[in-house]
Amino acid sequence: MSAQARQWQARAHYTRWALGPAVVLHTLGECTMLAREEDWLVTELTVTRTWTTI
Image (tube, rainbow, N blue to C red; front, side, top):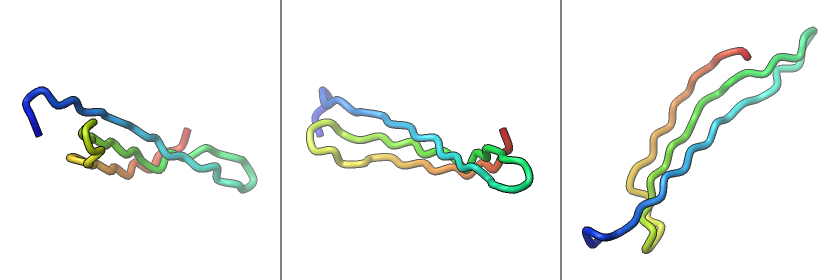
């Protein structure tokens, strides 16, 4: 990879609806990815699991 190579960062936030007596939105986690533009090789991947109620 050359010193001039560009990289792309992507983030995703995952949630789900918990169906019960009350419908509640829960945060499940987040994913962050860093990839090289030239060949889309993933150089970093971070996954967090944060369980919260919104």
